[in-house]
Amino acid sequence: MSEFLVSLLGERLVNSEKAEVDVQSLGAKLSLVGLFFGCSLNAPCKQFNGSLCEFYSRFKKTSEHKDKLEIVFISSDPDQKHWQDFLQEMPWPALPFKDRHKKVRWAAVMKSSSRSRLCLWFLWLCVVEVFCFGLG
Image 1 (cartoon, rainbow, N blue to C red):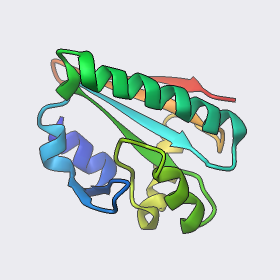
Image 2 (image 1 turned 45 degrees about the horizontal axis):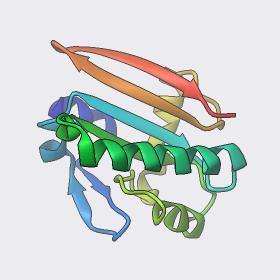
Image 3 (image 1 turned 45 degrees about the vertical axis):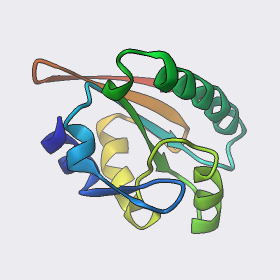
Image 4 (image 1 turned 90 degrees about the vertical axis):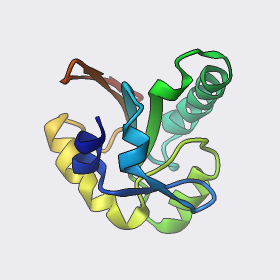
């Protein structure tokens, strides 16, 4: 999944501490990637983020498959301040704010609008399946 993720996300993500996350090494162990398209100014998105954080924390603490899942935040926030503030609430990495232009390509592929959504990318024997869930 590493090469696929690098082509999709680029070589680096960032976490809430502004540290870089290497996509190649991250993707080497994953089977499931959730792309969380969201915006801090969207109330349903903010609400969903809380629930997703709870699930993610519980999964990472208790699942025997905790290293097989990662979520990546893809922002629709209008400015870096909103993006940074929202990222502080998340335990997963994000596409850097300066790379937000990449979102346009994915939105077209997944028929996504500016509405928030979570897209789960499964890798099963080199076949990628995508499931998207609208959040309001």
